[in-house]
Image 1 (cartoon, rainbow, N blue to C red):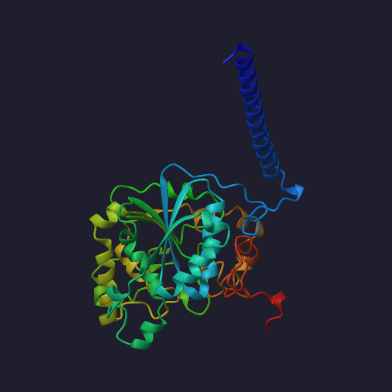
Image 2 (spheres, helix red, strand yellow):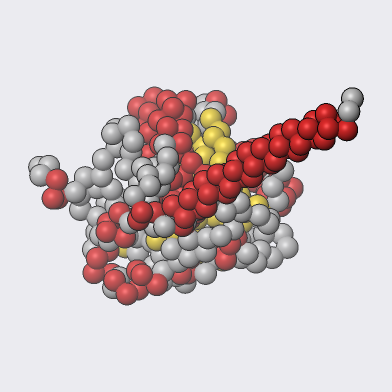
Length: 375
């Protein structure tokens, strides 16, 4: 090959290399421009770009950050007919804390599909949770011998008796009723101190901001006399004082290690079974029939919760007169125990509950409100 031919070949090779470099440079520039555009739209959604998840997230929700640190187990029950309550409660817990909250939702088989759809198709899809099916077999024959009574009882109210079963590897957990709204950081509640030997903490009725909650027509529900029949021999033998302040088990902080060591679950089962045989509960009992066994087992053997972390009786008659709006706003946890629920027509402070409710994507659950035109 002559020198001229070699020179021509080298020029062609150099030309090809330059073309390839130019193409590569243009590709890099194009990708950078696309990334910049994508970044700009995400940072400034008002530009008109519709993000794929915009319809599922509320406008004020920040991009989800992976939550790290110690897990805070929260157990809550879910009934089909009041599933909206669970959604509102979980949403309030999650949005008011940066803690690594993990929910265990205890429910029945007929609720699972509805629940998973509600969670997966709304902003709660980022929650950490597991669903546990409540097995009613352990309660068979222990609640009542009357089938009609058994049918009327809300079996899920007994789920709190079995906390270590749902989260066997946890040392501590929080149990919440579904008719609550959390306005504080749940980590603060979780860090409540439990003395050695105490398997649980509750909020005492006499010492709380909700003290002296009189439920109209049924007598005093803030001491043991309102829950247990002190004329019965089995109750007398316990040596409990009838005027001892009761507690509301709608919020529980549980030391699950102590719970298991003291065999609390078996003790509770013993008392529900004995009640079936000897009718130990007070005739004026208005609250859940799962409360008296807890009062017996934890008599003078429980820690206390900060009163502002369990402001209750919002579902009782006259709750709107009992609390000021300022006090309700300052409360860390609100509990609508009683007949009137915040998803119903006549509850007090339902506007507070409404802030945390997420509409049901299936359209099955609707809060009842006066302005809807329902009679």
